[in-house]
Length: 399
Image 1 (cartoon, rainbow, N blue to C red):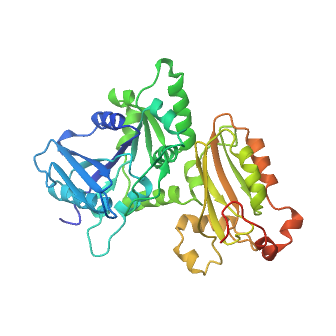
Image 2 (cartoon, one colour):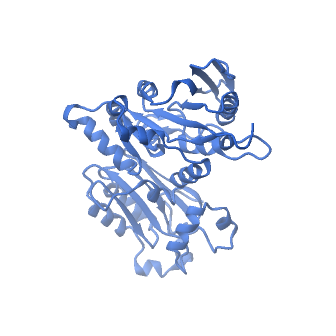
């Protein structure tokens, strides 16, 4: 293949139900001659680290280097990368629609799928990245985003990740999408479908939004949103920004301070016990929250704050960046280094609390007040690290 050959297009399609995903694929405004749909299912193998990856190829063109139906045990990103490159080599103008199941943790999977390889073919040599499309069944989404009593296993980069609540999986899918497509809208645009659309907008304010009906009748705005492409390097940077807990609040939100969404920030650490005491007030009416927090008795630990529905997780996820010459600084993403420069404090460095809240009917002032009250007071701040280290940690336990 010559280096001057035009690249193919790769569109990733997900849905919160198999029916919604299939309905969107059936309505995509793509030339049929070069269109190939690669549908994927991922199930846990009886033993071993990797899942069973089943692929089904549907193409109008007879040139199908990948078997019409094939199953393999292995890393889903490696298996699918090989399939995609084979399809591209068979047809330079190919447009592949990669239909992924709900069991895929999309952002880490996409970063792994598109990651440049040393000594091996890379996907970006063969494809441009079209928008990630998600078709949403409003009724199913309304149930999923509040479901915290059931957990599911998802597959991200390389192997199976930790079990996630159904609400967390639903939120991650929405946050990964470039375009959200409503499967149906009630007459007049009112009722539960309207509520679901508002919730989707709060979760991912940067995504385009349309409906299956608009795509079906060929509206120009819908067609433009679905047809644009970008180079893989730009797509990877955007996905990394949404995935990084430090930069995600900026990558996904575009709303002012309101009772449907706001960002709370503070430049002093939390008292561990008072933070526990504040959680009831801080989570009232919250549908989704993401961010990073600074706990006084763990001054070097970057803690991630993540909730979906009523389920909150706070976990240690690395270290705060120190001086720009440090190894951690060099290995951080460009977006995070840029943000650290903007917010750098000569004494505290990158450390801060920053949480994005979205919900319905939240009392943002009440939430902010509860969190403010959990911060260290001046006399506690003066104790310094040695004094903070003596406090018990009811939040994360002993180290």
